[in-house]
Image (cartoon, rainbow, N blue to C red; front, side, top):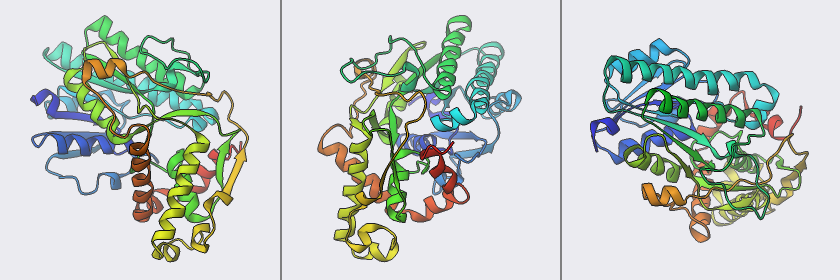
Length: 373
């Protein structure tokens, strides 16, 4: 792998997907070095980076809106590639307070674009790569029988979060077309896996089961999402860094469309069966219904739907398969269910991690997911 693709500036690298990507990149390329820029908001956690070789990874606490700081990091570490994860990403938070999403996702992305244009195009022209990580939510909502979104689907965001990400995508494309910045965009579907904050559906369901708290289900629970294991997502980004064509967008999905109720049932089944096999879990998590031989399904609570809720997301990954060689490993059927059970086991085994990141935030996250506004 070339130095261009080995040594990276990773924004939001202490967050869920960012930290998983840093681990994947360092494991994939033994010569790689990474500089992480993260503001360490509630979504960033240095614990996500625990165990990473400090000689190959430099952490800088800072804001992506600080253009001079970004310029200094690019110059100081002689970095010619950037992977941009840093973002506000919770839909409910964007409904309650859109301003922060505009500042971080739009103004922050523009700050990075200005910095990279200055250093990579004006000061010392040469090979470079700006990789922008985005979401399927920019495309809006699908009906159940609609074909999956392609890269040419209209952009029709329905939440302030989705609108802020769509705007940042447009800015990245504009900097490529106007200034010649070598930029690639990937739009991913719903991620799951280790180190995801329990404000998001999958880890919240797992943690609530273990703590004996209600399991929130929006509306009728039939909203459909395409579920992508975070490791598959990271592998796709590594492919896009090397093979992605400047100015192009690639959809990265998991080819696992499931309703919220199906996801809930997977979590409940995995935890119920885990307690049946391992009696020690009842001592570790005494508030879990499974500790008393009951099913966690008794915790299900239907709550009112969020405003502007999208019914279905699905991504057509044909282009990524063809041009990048991308293929998700945690695909539909038994492999997906096995990957999902592995995720549940990770949270059961790493309660010290989620208890530390939840400190002072748990009730806030529960309120968000119960739509208490």
